[in-house]
Image 1 (tube, one colour):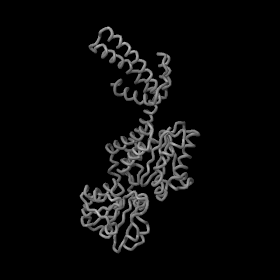
Image 2 (image 1 turned 90 degrees about the vertical axis):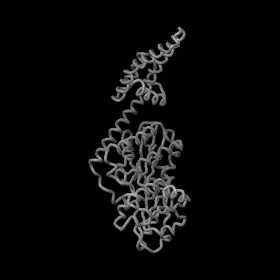
Image 3 (image 1 turned 120 degrees about the vertical axis):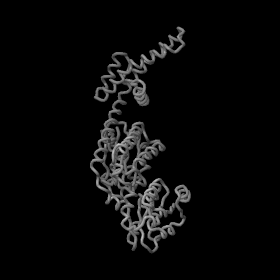
Length: 426
């Protein structure tokens, strides 16, 4: 059973999300280790959402409730957010709702800016981090991989990508009322990660050519060389020379503070979570601060047709994901039938070889026959599973062949699903 604990800009403050973004990603391993029935966890923590996806071994009864409370306790401990505050700010999703929600998140439909591009990459990286930590599971793998495919489909088949704009592009649009000529505007980018690359692309789209990059980690020079911009090792000097300062680092403490700002008018854009810029700078004369909370207030309204098209694709993908999950639960019956048939086949091929048939024609004919014989049962097994009658197929296999149609492993189930589609159904 899949569960999702979700807290986002829809139902939580940016202060709470900021705290969660620091400590929550470390909670996955603890959750798996501290529970006998949590078999996998993937944590997604971005600038405007925190989500924990749990794979639990028990149905959503007492075990599900315990898993939710355990997750709240662990995340509270690692993030410093009070358990009661966390409990009040999270929604708990289960079953098919989990897939539909993640597919919508990955497609940018739940972002501050509709159709935001960055979120699909963040979803992929969340799965990669779970793999590295050893906390993913086969069901979570399937869920997140299908989410990536769905987001690509939404992007390619709907206009949602044109409706939404990334956070940095919206921030630059908000700042444009104060900029006379972007081509003559000096910009300092603080940070060298993937978001810094996105920021640089958005600046160039507006004609900005005077860009300097700073990084406390010492990676600014390499980033600047790779992207054809300037770099500085002196943050205060870089700020003094810029009209716009954009921060996008993962620092847990503000990197731009009031003492670094000299006289002059400038726009500070804080895209970091936790905050990269001390909010106190907003009280300095001549300084305009755009942080995530301010930017989110100006997010564009949905264009209903594009959003509806995207929602329809997501709903279809979620339905298919649920149907496939049902198929896989009943796949052991196909595994048993295939094993039985191919066991008989191998024995017959061995007898043919002993009779001197070594030209391969008999073996090829027998394997083809086995495939033909298994085709219809394989199709019917999938149909019955999707209609809720998978047990009937398993019972038929047992009755007709005297083999256990309920035995099998999850690995076998995944393997036979692929084989059925690629080989038997060809």
